[in-house]
Image (tube, rainbow, N blue to C red; front, top):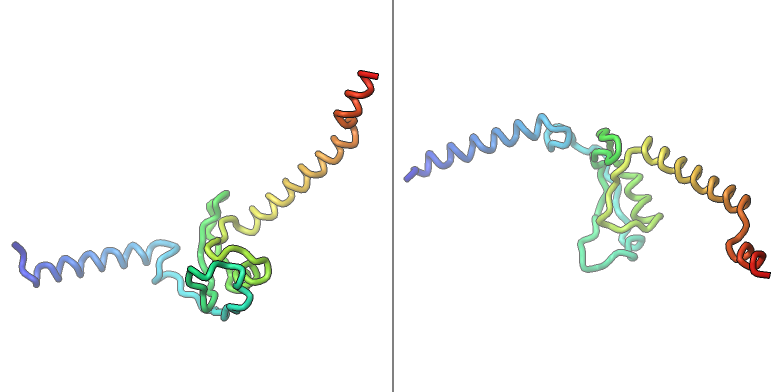
Length: 134
């Protein structure tokens, strides 16, 4: 059986190790401290459920891009726009960096353009059906 002194010493060593890991990681609380806070407007957050706590402020949040793996920061102003103007769900967060979002948007536009061209080139399926039949 260990004494209280031994247990406290073990707890302190575990805490020191954890603090070192957090300092080394890009998302650690010791490595990144947000400097900008923007107050949230609760009247604009009315589209969210009242069963969950609404934020009182927005702060810069670090995240890792899902596509390319780059470390990015979701700015407080962007969060305010997303939640209050675009009416995004309060639990949603950024998952793609700006470059990947632009790339995905271009791909989507190219796909829509391609579909429009294909629709103009080929006749409607019903038109083909009626031409063959009659």
